Image 1 (tube, rainbow, N blue to C red):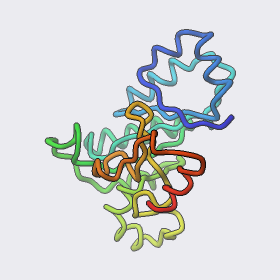
Image 2: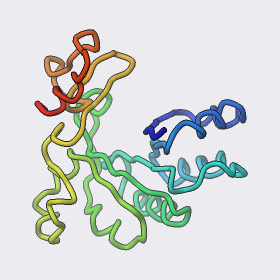
Image 3: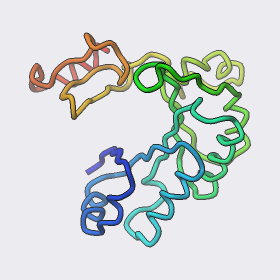
Length: 188
C-alpha cells in the first residue's frame, strides 16, 4: 500500500512494534524540518531500522523560516544523508501570518548540492520568473493550486485545493459519495 504520511514528533519511532506496523503499510513519509539539527535528529531516530531506506523518506521545509546560511547547512545535511527535500513556499496565513520571512536566492544554494529537490505550487508561483530565466521546463512545476493536487484535512473532515484556501472552497466529507474526490479534484 502506497501512502504519504506526515508524523510529528519522532517519539513514535521509539516504539518498535508501532513503527514497524507503520513502515509495513506506507510507501514513505515526510518529516518537517526547520534546520540541520532536525535532519540529524531524524537520522539518529532511524538508526538501526532495516525496514526503512532513504528513498522512502522526504524532508519538507518552509522557505523563509531560516536565514540563507542555515538553509545551506540544511541542504548539506540532506545531501550527506541522501534524503529528498521538498521546499514549501512561505504562506502568510495561520502561524505565518505575523512573521516576516527571510528572503534569499534559494535556487543558487540548492544548485550547489546533489539532492533531489521538489517545490510546492506556492514556491513555484513565487519564483516562476526565475525558474523560466533558468530554463526550468514548466512541465516540472505548477503554479495553480489544486490543478494536480488536493488537500485532504482528515482531522477537519474536509477537502479543498490547498491547505490555505478560503474556507468556502473546503468541502465536508459528508457531502462526498462514490467518485466525489475524482469529480471535485477535476474542478479545482
